Length: 222
Image (cartoon, rainbow, N blue to C red; front, side, top):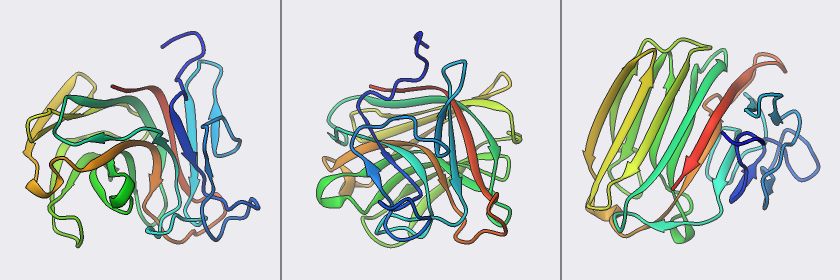
């Protein structure tokens, strides 16, 4: 980590509020990511805390509000080695949906609506979902690491191996697990991007304080 903490350079920021600041309608996206309280707060140690309420503004193809960084540049999947890596703690989850997507390889450009690879913190486990097709719900779902309670610091890395394969690793409390997946042919060469943050998976709130909260200590995309 450098002196300023987790860098926001090269990222956009999706917020759980619309252009008027309301928790409804179309989610606002900042073209240049910046700390935006209370949704994204920089802490004294340089880490970033993301807050996304269980009920908030959403993007056109989702029912879930989010506070999430979106890479400003895309890449062709399978053309070269690319990695998204992060170290973080999930400290709060929605009451009725204890599930937050903390990292993605997501469709870009013409396939902007397609979430391709997703790393979830789900009920104290790190779960990886890889879609099998551009549309529909068919996917490969694997529990990569279990025993990751709220407040436990962990790390993950999603790597496009550049040869049609995908490698995902997760580490917590000295334990590291790895999985390798052959990518469905339909995604090879497709335009994708990295996304990282607090994409909570509830669609309704039991109170204004209900939602997901995640603190990131490092984020790197290469």
